[in-house]
Length: 345
Image (cartoon, rainbow, N blue to C red; front, side):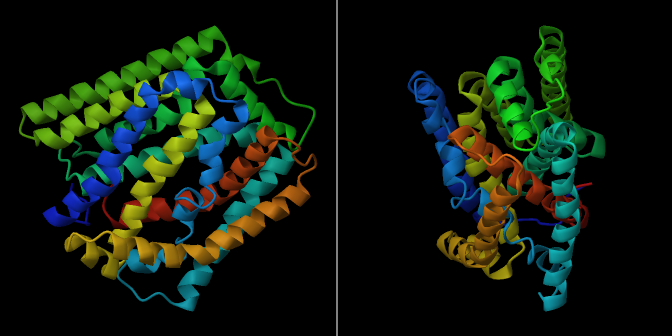
């Protein structure tokens, strides 16, 4: 089962130089500098999330109003953009209301929704950017989605439970002082169970992929896949969670999605086919700017609406992530539709 977006070798090489190799080196650099990063003040650990307001993170979903038409090779119209706007208003609004009514369950759902979404971003990158053929079936791709998405969302729970719990509690405290106990999620038995599951998922992913290579699949994409899994394990074990997840959001997940939406934009794709990255970046920046500005206004409105407005860097970051959660719900629907059209499943 091949994805519909077959790329030229030139485009793949251009993306490799732009969004794979530099990001790998960045994560390796962070791992090597882990003692210095760990010694940063708690405020500075939030810097990647602060940068994500304008650098890749928040903007990566700000072209969703253009994506459905472009993915279907259709003309972008007012109607197509309003349809996406309606989707955001309904789904995002319902999920945001959930936060006001039941913030604890909304926060837990956010973790698993993000796990799925970040995994689906990686599976597309493997299949399209790397032309991986060691994941031919839906079950193998689903395994990869879960394993990849679990790296940023569950490895920190295993290795940095106190920090993880503090972040979740900060989400909930924006809406309620009566916090339903979530301490059991960070207990040793739960963490041991999660560890066993993640190790099992990783091992199964690597072994099944190796079997596919043994039976004829291409070696290089498989080695990159396995190498990335190892890199992500080490990265999220080593670094403080809020810093590590912020870096991952900005330069791993968001850049891969930006490349994905560039491919369905024909002028950007032509630029990539000519080994030019700058025109694609300029077009994305132009297309994302208006709704990035709207999203910033949305965060301002959310600041006014939450029952307990933030008063420090931790609660400000929590507010930002709750806003990201409300925007992620409809964004996942758009990306899932892309997955279907582009034959990921």
